[in-house]
Image (cartoon, rainbow, N blue to C red):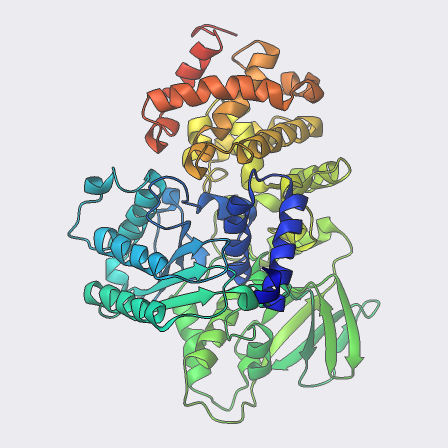
Length: 569
């Protein structure tokens, strides 16, 4: 009854209804609520929609858990990163375990299920294989990933944080529910005594607050003195007080603004010699100003407007060089409670408004090419990716070359194509390796040979467009399939993409020219559904799990379904 609801409950119910109808990609509002609410929780983590989807665990045998996400130093960790994973001492692992229900209250049941799951799966003495009949594969794989990361980084003196989220449209928390939450914290502490454990109850009021919090696209930067204006007074060189710069790169919660660094291609390198030197310079003030001893940072913006002689308004600021320096400044001010009241030192800041996207990419490449880093990290600055972005935009798709650029512009999820997603589509179609696409989403473009086959040997932008268009069409079809779990959708997505195209052209070896000449209008949901039924049936016959999807032999089973023999062309 609406008269018993608060204003925020009424508004959030209507908001979710409208967002659900506008998304056009979810079969029911309950499933959409999971995606929607988790997206709000991770606003400051800069996850794209595919990354959020991959963490969803709801469905049968989910143990009361709709999502599990693992972060190392605020960066999402996936299974294919384990082999080469390393980090600095004192780094932080965060494990998020989330339940999201489109209901109007908080109950004890959610916390009780969190307690049971924690007792069963977070205790290293328990074998995860013993719980295969109780928890679904995605739950078990997520906890296995947490265990593997913790084991791999054991000597790095990792700090562990557990974040439990109970999300509803509720308002009040009953004392019994809060007591259950306290008991959950105690339970975790028994197995992880030095960990931090937090239980969050997110209701209609908090969801409304999160929903109305937009990524800041315009922000003021105060300067220590009048800046030097260059060119047509669109670019500047300036000194910024260290504490002012710290405030600039942190949000209201005191966390670093991750979205400011999305164009920076180097991760924070931890306690190496350079960063240790920066840290020591910060901790031990001398007669020399900080900017005398440091190269400073480079900030790109779409527009810079002088507010006063010592203040600039930056639109869409991105720190493309200076991640190491910025992180050390963040660490210095956020982790040191005994700092002097007055900070007189400054950092040198270069502020640039690039004339073109090519110029922007050249700056990013040049300012990040002064140390030894893999060229694969700079892939998206290659000309071909800019061309793909421009070609897609004119045809209603948005190639997210700069992560979440189009999500922040409120483009629809169904129309946004991430760099990884396009690569997965191409690998599935051209290289006929949907198993590789499924198993290695984070490391697809690190191999030069694979990259050159996909982006060096083809120059026809129509091929990329049709590959992405069909990939999104099939992804959206699967999202609208009610009787499939998130894991099942992910497992068969790229196999279904391959099968649909191969069936349409009636050949098992798909060439660039085949995709170019394909009439995508003839690939309807009805056509997709017919092939999906057979693939899903075979997938389940073979075990219906990630091992099937990541095996190199499942593609042979797909060819049999399509009546292709091993010699089919």
